[in-house]
Image (tube, rainbow, N blue to C red; front, side, top):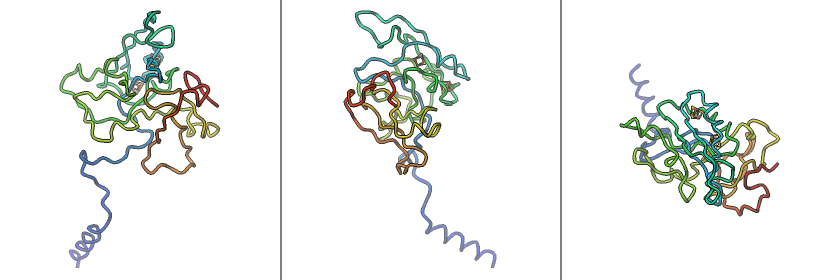
Length: 222
Ligand code: SF4
Ligand code: SF4
């Protein structure tokens, strides 16, 4: 009888819904707070958010960020600040995706996308440069040859969450806490832990005019 019981288990499992998918052709939605490879964001007018302050490098426990700031050229400033991140590198052979750099950044310049499918055959490829990290003119991460981008991967990639989000403090629930972003406008506030969850586990993206929200650029709205 023992082996018949075994067959029963097999037959029962055959009609159960499958939890596996044909990865990587098919991908499951990634969780809202997923930590993937970083991007350097730009304001809606195209200026870079990084001001070269090096706080991210200082807080990084893996010591994998290298930043050098430089004064903005007065006739062609790169960022709205006095300085900009002239050199910016992240070594992905060392990064542990802890997101402390994101938390430390005063201008929301560095955030993490949801992309984790990348592999290298060359050590130089593992060290992402500023040119590779800065989002393109559509506000989306640049798709590099050693990264596995599939259809839909570029949507909502810059899903950045911070300690000041509702999960950290309920009084922030429903409150926009970030500046406008190139290609995305001002993102809606993060849903709170008690709110109904988006089944895809993602923030929906809405485009708004910068002046919809008074502090859309560089300020927080509470
Ligand atoms: S995610 Fe963590 S380990 Fe990676 S660069 Fe940022 S602070 Fe460093
Ligand atoms: S990414 Fe943020 S914390 Fe890092 S240097 Fe630029 S502005 Fe400073």
